[in-house]
Image 1 (tube, rainbow, N blue to C red):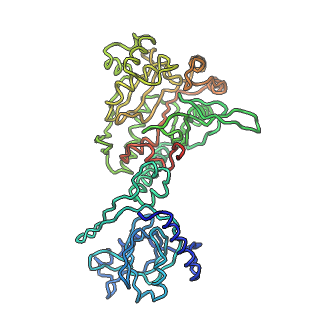
Image 2: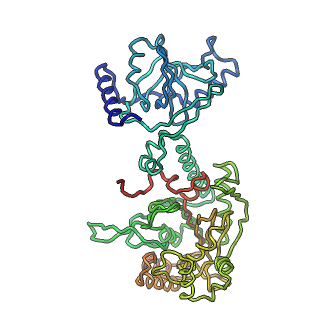
Image 3: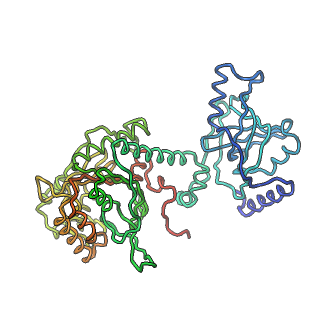
Length: 508
């Protein structure tokens, strides 16, 4: 590729030439009344119904978009103009535009935004094309986008793009350029938006109220995670970015809002991985007079609603797997699954025995881990990778579940489930603990773990305990990672591919 500094210099020279010709390089507006895909569809409909003009032209269109390809032929030029819906070919002809306007095309570049007015027709090669009767420069691009090489099949007209923007980290850093040159990336984020809309429509139809809870909190809680810490200077008070919405949403259940949900940004001060970004989107909902069994049914119905309304199929491809969402999903006891993997009843294993097994398997990050976290890490090492089809992992140990009710049939575990798909956790749910005395004891046990070095343990939240003392009805609650759901439904293997601006290390 030509030296970038040379390209930038040439584009600025063109900018100066535009000014000399009295052409505004950065327009204020343009009345683009038509879209590329709609123009093509309208032309095909008129063609099939015999409504074209004698010259074979369709109705006039006013389009706005970015120039993504260019082929000059002396007194004519063909470009592809792309807008948010798709692209269409534009035909510039000197005899139509006039000498001066056609000469101004020499100052245009790939990446420039233009407005075009003209009539669609079909070329000899069969491509629907707009014959430009006039055009307007809308924005001069001063830096070339990393378009790939375009090959066009001479017989079919099919265009194949070989990307010139292949470094993945650069694509994340310059998402604006990534979106500009990769239509398939734009489609992922359109699908994400439709998924979020479908989630909202489902819960609205179920009688849930969408609410907003604080992002800045005086205490963090509702999950096992390390928070981001900040300072409110006017109050001289340490504050935390929320790690979960849970405790505030359950306060609302206490207050009589018996079905609530929130789609919100949460923040956890953790490392980056294929499925972890420190800033992420959570959907949490809480339903009074329900338990975790009710929520399993709710989860199944919610996922089917999203699949039916957005994807159009209950089977999706994710990596090398075909995932089929057909209820009822499998139920697997966490302790039972891990016991089978170890060949010993985990209930009978003490903390030292669990730690020894984890060290033998070279499980990372064991410092400060208590019995519950050791069980969780061993399950992640030995069982999770094989959970490909949707499975509810149920009945977690009490040490791992400080906000869940004890199981009504086995006091050693809690009424909790996580949904796993393709070896990754998608959501977490409880029969919510509503006994304030038990809740205090759980919080105090978590505080002891925090003091012992577990920086993901929870604090004692006195205000939340006070809320429970006023009385919270039996409640079922669920927290789901929206980013992970989008990953699975769009076949993206990294969370960074479904977050528009993921967190990255400093650019070197």
